[in-house]
Image (cartoon, rainbow, N blue to C red; front, side, top):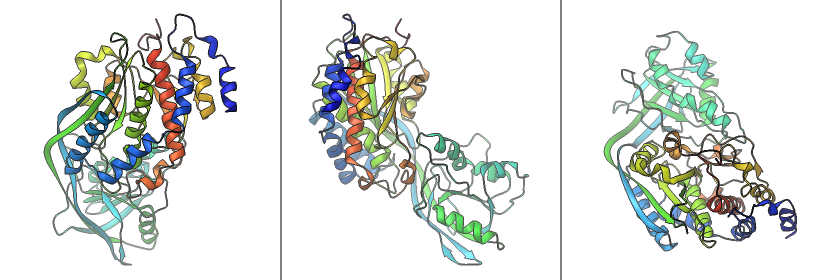
Length: 454
């Protein structure tokens, strides 16, 4: 292909004689990944055979066994399961409807960690706030005995900024409770106009904080209630049932062993659990499939550093990151860098590395290897590698970030539309190509990510 000549003409010869990383090997693996369907086959298998897999459900136990079997089949070593204690929130029956002045059946999903309503449900007048800021500015007891709806739209962005700004409204039930509300509704944290609601976990409330039932509405239904409320009082009936149970969750792990046991470990992966409305294709079956396929391809080049693929067991309702840190405190020094794929399967557009890495003679050529994939070498140091590596990052492990285009991700995220049908196989392969090229270079580099190369 024409771009090969461009890539190798852009300074691949910059690798110093002492450096081990080979940009030509990385480029060859990149090209192989663009014609490889391992990730697609893994994703199809997980979504078809296991489906939705909330932590604490029978399905996530089947997903654990699926992960072990796939790692073994693909030739990974040190395949094992790391159990940890988990209080799981599990959904029961749910319904909602406008009972006056204009009857209307609502489409909603309870939010993770929400308590149940009484068995007979709650019927109350709705008060609408157009933003979380407006709710926070409202006086205490302004909503006594009412249901609060925050109908704040989300901004579509290529990165995660739009979501990071909007998602605070999902955990605002305590703000509503402080103002006397008996239940809380939120416009789905979504960029879609589909009626499909988007669930998600609320942050666990602090001690002494009143907890009230909470649910997300499909975007059109949230807007409809606001339109009705502009005419006069609106009454809504909510019935939300759920329960919690003390159980176990499991993180599954497997290695592509490096040729130098002293060179350290690169930890990558995705999370095995998902929400229940869809089949968890983009959140986060894709991340598991991408990283597993990339590591398998990298094995053919006999990397110097070990590449460890991890399927974290409870990201959506929390616990994976802390459990992984607890299980690996004694060997954190062996992890040279970590990163997670957890933003779907659309094209990667930039790579962030720890400070100083792009200046290393055997990492700098990676910029040219990634350029044909339309991936930029970001000058901003990586500060976040994914929620499941957050705790080990806080304990000193450097992270990388292969940033995916999130422009359409939040149309489907946490909804019934998160299925294999929305995954583009071509973009999925681009992700694998980016990961395997990056892994190839980082696994053979001499660079010390913890100390900026020093």
